[in-house]
Amino acid sequence: MNKKIIAISVLTVFMCVFLWAQTGTPYMIEDKTLVKAYKEGLEYNEIGPSSETDYKAWVDVVGDETLYDTYGIDIYGIDTEIISDSLHFDIYTNFPELGDPDTKEKVGFYEYTDPWLTPADLFFSIDGNDSVYEYGMAMTKDNQGSLYFKPTYETSCDVFASHTNWIYGGRYDHLVPKDVPVLITGGDTILGKGAVHWVGLVGAGPTYRIGVDIPLSLFGDDEIVVLDLLYGTAICANDVITGSAQPVPEPATMLLFGTGLIGLVGMGRKRFLAADKRRHAQIKRK
Ligand SMILES: [Ca+2]
Ligand SMILES: [Ca+2]
Image 1: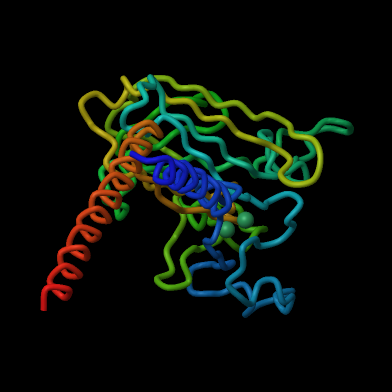
Image 2: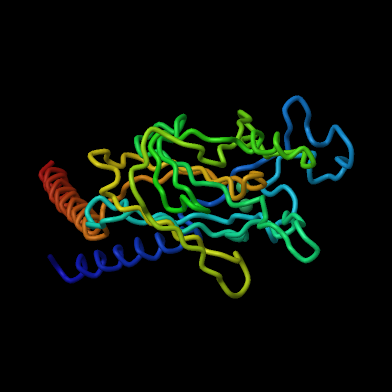
């Protein structure tokens, strides 16, 4: 290989890495899912104080963004060649582990209950079929960190049916509106324990990073084909994030693949030059 080709190859690799870095978004899964306040047979904007513009449209967040906004999710442990023993989610949100402080109820002169409006549980699928989320991770309370197989659940509308002073639960997906699963009530099996941690963040942006760690051994022989997930942020589903991620080859494999491509380009160029020479020779002979 002459120096020129080596220089071009090195430059190409740098360009690829640079472009890859440039197109990188802040989160692996960006929150693009919209929600709308809803009660069975009745949309929030049809009654009472509902004239507030917030509740008339499909929006990212219903209500207070400083409390309910979820920004994005990063996923680790699905690289096909990096041996990792756990699947890890980092969820970036403003919603606190203890829930919406305004939903504490007074039980004594100075005493209050814990907030009843708490974080949603996390639902995901690994087989590439996102019409059924076959796994559920309990995010709070006594079963925090438990991984459920084929979880049964309440939707935000179910939850709000028992809190009549609150008239809505979010629905998601403006193309085909669906109820949002938010609270695991049981399931086929509890596969085992992972870990869930709320970590406070400083500066602008999300208030918390929720780390969710699930040992891959809990999935048994089930391989991760495509990871599809849904997180309703809170049991009111005031913000919903959905998205998917596919296992990717490790960078070394990508580099080999890239080098191979450059090699092919080099070979093609040599062949082209040879053919060009032959053509010229033929022309000269004529
Ligand atoms: Ca959203
Ligand atoms: Ca959001």
